[in-house]
Length: 390
Image 1: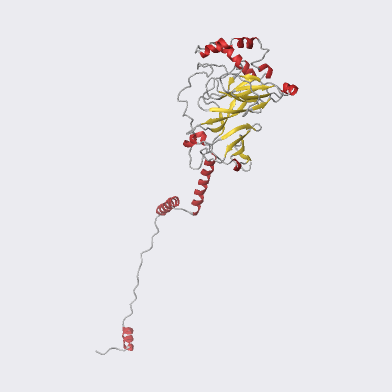
Image 2: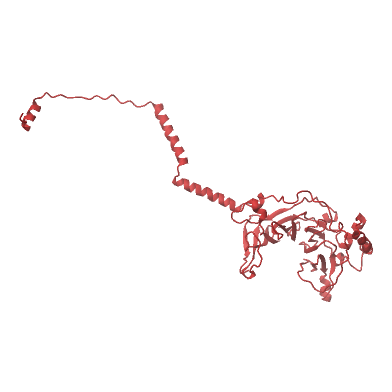
């Protein structure tokens, strides 16, 4: 069959009946209001959840801020406050006295014309000089030095205990020193200052008590050397002979030891260096504050019971990076040689070369110790003299 032309096809299409097809859609229905609210709440909940899980530009800033805050607080936290010094004593210290509880001869007398490594202080009013030598304290009267030049030192504290490092109160009415009397560990003591002549325990112009005590010295010391326990009468005589009748202990250390006591300008307290040993015998220092009895309290023998470790820490050791408060006891470097600067500041020195362990053979020309000042009210610390080239 022959194919139709295009005109024929068009003609056929034109002859077909025209039909219009209409498609009908159902009317749209909006969801009820409560469904829309429910979906809205679900979307909000999902958004909040995702914002807490997924990082956002502002979350990084928030995390950095928190880290900075923690770092700031950690920098200024004192690890000493979290450390408990419970290595010793494991029990209450057994009462004993280095002067009486060991039988040994007490006779040791000598005359010298010079000494080295002597620690001294000058009375703020009279100019009298006190110094230590071989565990005893002596005084040079300023009046005698001015009148005669070379003069003989007066012994003011003698005996078996090792006494050293004397320092006057601001008013010159008391003298602090360190001694291993009673406990055999160096503690801080205080006594009333009466002047070189009045405190001379070998004076040729002895008063009745000192004269009687010196008269019985040889016999009473022979009793101690033979192991005869000291009674109250002999103890009184010994205190008079040694110059300890008015002496009171300020600290109560039975394992740690304390040195370098210096009066506060008020005269009511001292600062001293407390030494801590760890894996080696060389101690690490800290600054501790201790109340000191007044002259009236000493005369009235008014002394409160001092607990072991009594005192207030005012400068502590710093730890190297990575150390925690549990490692505090192993730190062998700390502040030393504290003195007051005004009412609320402390000046001290510190080894800034060693980080945590003391090392020998350091180069002193490159510097070892830096001198700092700490304000106890604000906690601010400033450098007064750097280790190099100081």
